[in-house]
Amino acid sequence: MKLLSTLLASGVASSAVAAVVERWWNITYGQANPDGLFERRVITVNGTWPPPPIEVNQGDTSVLHVTNGLGDVVTAIHHHGMFLRGHSYMDGAVGVAQCPIPPGDTFDYTISTDVQIGTYWVHGHALGQYVDGLRAPFIIHNSNETYKYDAEFTIIIGDWYHDQHPVLLNQFLNIANPTGAEPVPDSGLIYFTQNGQYLPGFNENATLPFVPGKTYRLRVINTSALSMFWFWIDGHQLRIIEADGVDTQETPVDIQSISVAQRYSFLVTARNDTTSNWLIHANMDPAMFDSVPDSLNLNLTSSITYTTSAPMQEGPASVDYTNTVDDYALVPVLAQPIGTANQTVTLNAFFDTYSDGQNHASFENITFNTPLVPSFLSATSSGSTDPAYYGPSASVLNYNQVIELLVVNWDVGLHPFHLHGHKFAIVWKSFDVTSPDTSINPPVPEYASNPMWRDTIMIPPGGGVRLRFLADNPGTWFFHCHIDWHLSSGLAWVLVEAPTVLASSETYRAPSMIYSQCAQQNIPTSGNAAGHNDSASNYSGWKLGPYPQQLGWHSKGIGAMTGCVLSAVLGMAAVVWYGATGISEI
Image 1 (cartoon, helix red, strand yellow):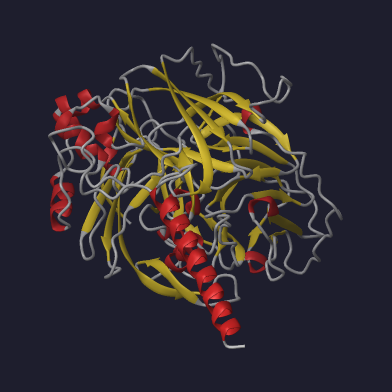
Image 2 (spheres, helix red, strand yellow):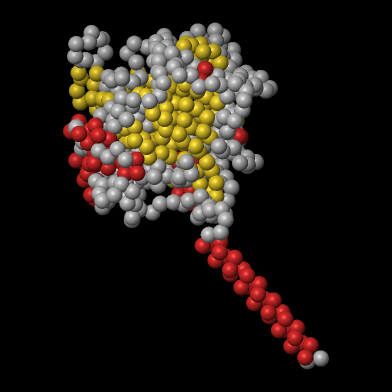
């Protein structure tokens, strides 16, 4: 890490000093065996795995120089949960915010933290690379913390695969997997950081040193590709104080569910005795898996150590998984009311077997295909307000309007949805959108005085949410399921926010490195999603689909039936001929 400069906030009395903090990441391949079960190829940073954690103070500018040393594939980095005001092109979503970083080249991600604090993470956003290990914590320390504590740790939990992502994806998106069963992880991981450094070990070989009577902040990040976790600590009360970078009113909880990409901070006060050590639990929810292999240990543990020689205290024999807090019930410390929506974007999520014989996910029965021209460059080069200009999986948001995303999960499984570039207010959450029971399908409020805000929400099967935010951040923002397998199968949408503003001001113009890297890969930097200027919906040259299977008779079905009928007729004719020949010979 290198500090280039320090700047006092102009006109603001503060004891904190803002800095420009630079880090250099060379992304390469390496070997790792964190679960102790299997050594595999992983994606490393500067030859090490896990990639180094990033910690900054509010007001700092983080500059991450990312060099693609993979040699054979592209890459990109997403700072999960960051607003990136005026710099949507720094978001890292390939085909939406930028062209990917070609092998051997470097991209400089410049991230302002002026208006954000809390627990975030950085991860690969190309080719499922975070599944292969390209992921790390990103912590923004508040110079004026809402709650007092003596020390803090970051706890990283996540699922872990022994096969590489391309192998698993080929197995998942395959006609041999018509039900769309997601790859089940081979194991899970728990590991820790403190003061920007990893503590030794994983799982049962990792421990947090506690001092009696001290109060600790535990920042927990779920970095999984698929798995939801139940998190608790034997013998210690958890108190939620933050979710996804939003400080909340202190909420006691015995156990907390944490879905993919979500983050929570807990206050935990250490016990006053040192006669025992205690287990930290992170149990994978089997409901996320189509089947649970006998070899998979769902229940991960690490520990809190008071005295190295002390025995481990046995926890309760059973756990009540219902004794958790739904994110809809959390209350922010600082109220941010939001009123009636001016514009609603409806996104119904479906899973089905599509025209290619594979099981795909979709919004509005449209599987997402990465635009040939990054959406940001289409917007800044045209200012088009026609959603079709950005492809069939896009909506245009009007500037400074209250936007409502109505998202309904028609699948039988749980889904964590993430919005780039914004936090959203959870103004309505239904556990069954078809139910007349208002306790699980409540009425929709016009106004929310102090809703919970976050950037990732889990939607139950058959349920739905209404998520509102102010479209005050011009850019092109991805909304997608954060289960990596579902994103890869098409469960994503692009929100093009204030395209006329993007096109009319130099403030939003992408830096030259983006145009240069696009040019290296022969990726056009203007035109609609397919690179055309003649028509918004001219998608020639862009491979779209697959599409929902058609009901009734269509060309493929007619062809198949014709073939079957001809085969049957020829078969019967052969039988008749053979029989007649046999009779004549008797």
